[in-house]
Length: 480
Image 1 (cartoon, rainbow, N blue to C red):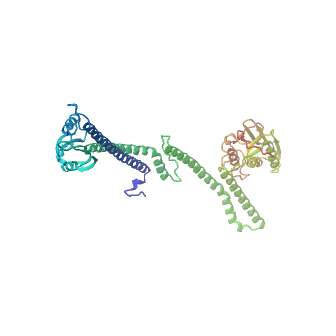
Image 2: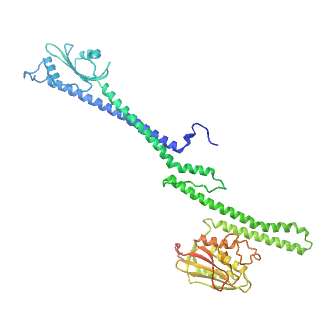
Image 3: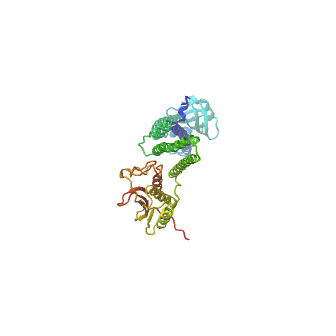
């Protein structure tokens, strides 16, 4: 059942990724804008301080010089000093230049938007009360103001020169520029967030499809697949999931068919056992009871063989099914031949190849060859010829078992290696086989990277071959 919480959208990976990106972008934007504002304010204060010092220094140098109009030193003629100075100077932005004689405003210059001296009269009175040069900042009705005040003793009047800067207007311009920058960055962040949301949805779409597919998959429907178009990591995960589904579907289909065939094959001996056990009390003589027990025992043995064969086939799909080692083919063929001769009274023959080493599981290959020999025994009479041999080529080794029996029709060649399938050209009723022997042979061959097949050889009945490749890398030889 899906959650109905209003916050369920926060569980989306896409939303969380975009949310983290947005938060980082917003914090970065706000932090960078605030830092920019701080730097601009510091630079403004530094420029104002330099400008005030320069104006005050220029005024002091002028006062200690000569009057360009007369060529005589200014001396204590403050009015002449003020006249010459103000004839040359223009107030910078936010700046006001003030000259006072005997406490009265003699001359002034001020930039636009700088208040009239009468608007900050209390500050002017403070400056007029100074006896020494002073530099600092002071609060005025027009805002915080930086200033340099230079008092002079003159004849017949004392004077005061003040250069002050009102940065409120420039600070407002900085604030407006910073606000504009902040709006632009936030707008860019919103646009980037929307694009990130769309891109994240595109990138994570295979994962969403994977989750939806996983929810609807059941043990009866493994046919669903995830559509992928890209080559990114999410698409690779989806492709891997599709591959896994394909393997699971094949495995489940094979398993279901295998279980169906197994249950069908075991049903017959179980029915036979049940029927004879129910009739056991009706047997009147010890001989009849012994015959019934022997029949039941035989069916139990057959079931045990079926289960053993099924266990081998089940293990064939595991990675530890084989224990590979260096195997000398000639010695292997002769060893199997000696074991085969004990199976039954047949004309056993062997065709051993030249000494050749391959990488294989000796036990499993022996098991496969003995299975082929046992199969030949079941379908031949006493004295019939059964021949074992091997052919070696640069690419592969062919191990074969052939007999002089009735053979197998060509139309059965493709199905006799299938589990629970039997050829139609042999009397399978008398063997009681479950159709698993050749399946085991095929499984062992395929586990080695080879194959098992039925071939035709003139003059012989059935001929089975096991093909084992020789291209595997052999382990280092034992130094002993």
